[in-house]
Length: 354
Length: 272
Image (cartoon, rainbow over all chains, first blue to last red; front, side):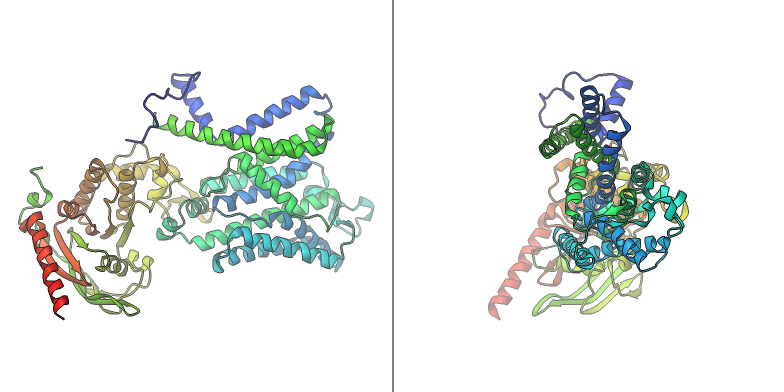
């Protein structure tokens, strides 16, 4: 009904738009998708790099892009859940690194690989639960609480490993030593040794979480908790439990793909700080169309945002531009993506009501 | 407006002749040294719309919060259809058929209308996976909104895109959908234009008469209450001082009563 229109003189859905049945419907559907912006930018970058350098479409540089997009994407997918709540998890990057470290530590103590993986994933869930409890029960803002856990985890890993250099990861051991690690064969390939396994894991997890957010009761609870905390609580949504669950899921996803990543590279550096990952991940979420205000978010968008960052990283390297420029481009793209998202939102609202 | 709702209710359908659904007996409530409710007696009949009016601090909100299960009274009794009840939580009150609508803040702006209608009572499939049965929910939402004459452009529209009146209507619709028999409305017409107010007034009257839902409505605006309600209770200083059927009185008469009651209270206060 009387939805306020900004100005009566405003041209209907601006110039150059297709009118009429099908094209109008397609345009509407197109505009309504929050993932439009990162897809456009990613495709543009992809074409640009392919034209500029014939080396870009080799498996090596695509692999480099995937190698960057994997970790960032995994953390971003979990982060979307927390961002939809209107919260943030700054420790997910460190969980991504700490979980495989715990697994390795247990394995060194003689725990079988399978059990070490399960135990380390439980540790990851535990970290998420602690984050959630601090935020919900002690009323600490999530930004502060998770920043604190991030530092604590980083410190513990450094203390326990004496800041020694890279440590080997069992799944990546060469086949001849497979007597030490009986699972290496197919299992090892699946959990990271095969070069494409990590990105496929991330794609699978992104699709699952996307579905959970859009099509399940839990998803509705997450959106309502983030969209109107008081209103959701009054309707009987267990908002505290929902928040804790999201932090647990975010930690779990980061930790799980963290293990795959460590197995893929066969080593990990305890001195590597997770805070680097988390900032890319939040960047990917924002580029993908998730606002930091809560109530809205797109998992697919966050994954595409991660791919965008990966393509940019690998592309700039292959065309010989200094990696220092990479940071400038990322910043610029974030601004462009946010502006376009806002513009598309207004356009979508107008298309809906006209 | 010749057809005021009070005038259309004939004596046979008079709400006072119907069953009493809720009784409040000598309820008191203090917050520290501050005595907010000093012995409230109130009764609500089936299908009756009862207005609660009074100044800030008269205790209206406190009374409604006790009825909605937010906190218990210090003393006194609540009776639902003659049986004494004690609410330990909002869910508790809700389980007894009492729902509260808090202005238009109850909806989730990012969720579509149908999701808001089914919030926390989603229809799911797939057993423990709790997959949303969106088709079923859309269908039921459309049917239900048609039934109670609430018009929204589309049940898929996000609640944030609706007007204030439409949001309020959806909030009221949601509360009654879950088989609420008593609805508590906190300033349902606040910040609403004439047309929007009309929408809510019609909805409230319709729900009360066709579905036998009883309502308690808080509002500062006397004229609004007079049009909405079958009966008006005036609260002053933690007590109910006036209890009048709207059909037996006029807006002017009621205002006069209220003012004189204030005057006598003021005199008492000055003399003591």
